[in-house]
Image (cartoon, rainbow, N blue to C red; front, side, top):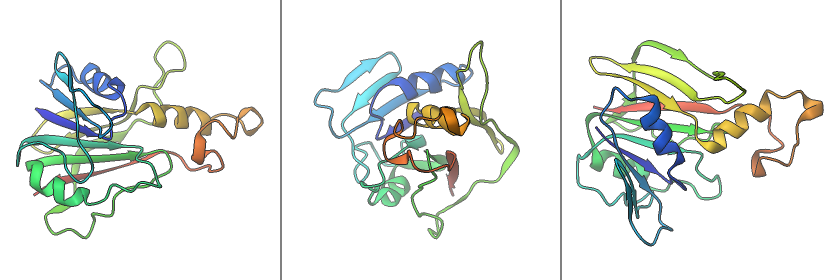
Length: 190
């Protein structure tokens, strides 16, 4: 299964995705325009990519993830790249600290995914107070995927659950004044 984490920023999300889904044979491409040198760590690779140009072959991706894109730098023509690069049945998952998502609902080829047995996991404790995943879902006729929260979304989930008197309102950059929780949207290529 080939995955592209577009706008990756680091390898942390990719490693967590592989860790939470050991039953899947994942190769994760971490796409970022600022990387000068491609890098490979086992089945996790850095590639130079942008929202408008993933720099991968047509219909080569099973999953594309977009986590916490900067609200001042919208993901441009990501819809065209999704249509070009996703295999039929491939998934696009968008997660954001305050609920910004690409507006692809009106696209004819992409439609909301219908899940079987979907349950949302907003906060999972593992030994201490470390949340691990945003959600788990089963794609009809396919596999179960546990979707990790990106570092930005992890910090946001922790912050909004703190009592107001303990919250450091300046800690999460431009999201500090908002009480909105992270959200996730998923689409499937028809």
